[in-house]
Length: 265
Image 1 (cartoon, rainbow, N blue to C red):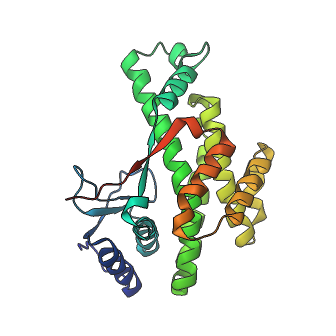
Image 2: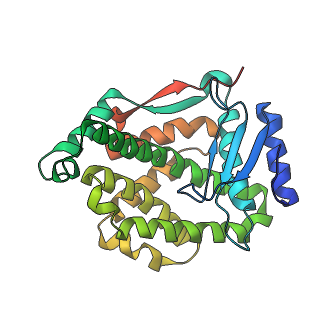
């Protein structure tokens, strides 16, 4: 376990819980270049030997909640027996469909006359980003609920974390991302974000933050996804089923598959 700053005791406790549960050390470090507030790279065979939690530093602000949040993703995976731990990976069908979306008349690839390698890079970027979103958002809602139940002292930090997410997500909805992203990829990703925003807007009593998604007609998808979420048991053994149910609703079933997670040797 490595630290580059002083962390709250609750954060240290959760990190230790992850290390005890997984039997793998956790490294925590800041990285101002990551596109999200924080992320986790779980230890894998042939890859990183330790769990790596990266967080984006914000001047004068503590990263404790972000670290606890990412660590809880690891806890949920390792709460399953080894034969029930899976990674979500893309499929040839998903790559083919996204590449087709990128190359239809009027698309970004034809507009800017992109080379084959550039199209493949964009395909990978869009597909990977969408699948990460599909996996991280519904399970992230479970993570927040678990933290709120077991570590209520994090509640104020939770609200700050969610507000940061609101700000980042609004930029994606209103910015130039829409102009360069294939419509199906953009609208599917935004439907997932809309579910997140609706959940938290109601939980925090801030209905106004959902208005942009309502205006863009994402409310029906958001409510349908949250209905699926609420009907699914919250035990980690159902996390894969929850993602599959969201994937089916969004028409992504053929775009991904599950691969057995392999820890470092």
